[in-house]
Image 1 (cartoon, rainbow over the protein chains, first blue to last red):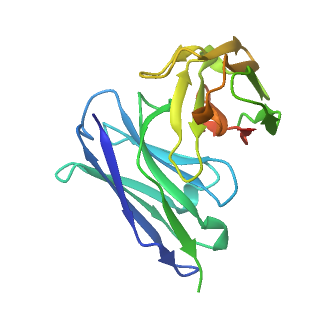
Image 2 (cartoon, chains in turn brown, blue):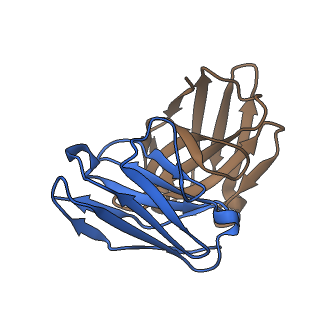
Length: 120
Length: 107
């Protein structure tokens, strides 16, 4: 059973960077046929896909965030990370990491989300 | 990007009733690459349906998905108390994948 565990700083100041890490257990980030994604949900709102990284290391990003987002993978630690630069209050959201069954597909395993607040 | 519009916004029903949720896409969803998720308050979304009509592992058969092209439906045949939640559709036929705004099923 794949499990994802998310860790992050819960409070970030405006203009700084937001960093999150998702540790994977019960599976490998190098496993064939899967991508590892980031999704967020502003308070009281719907879901927004941020981007993903495929097992080959190829990344895809939502065009609305592409200029500020970097997703990377650490295969030695079996985890992947999100970095979002120049944050504003609009980036306040519950952030999730998830596994995609394929590349740019649906999400079959999710981590418990973390609320990250952007505030001075 | 493809915009998904879910209706109704809220569906008020009782246990034992049938729920029919709609998801309409702004353009054709390639290969019917549409998924449905259930999210309860304070919890993580849970995959119910993928490719419009395939049930995910462990999902009860009272949940069914149908539709093609731009119009998709999630049906819950007989609502159980644990089914009261928010339901989201997601298309993954065209990148970026997008979600609908959700339908809340409440009592």
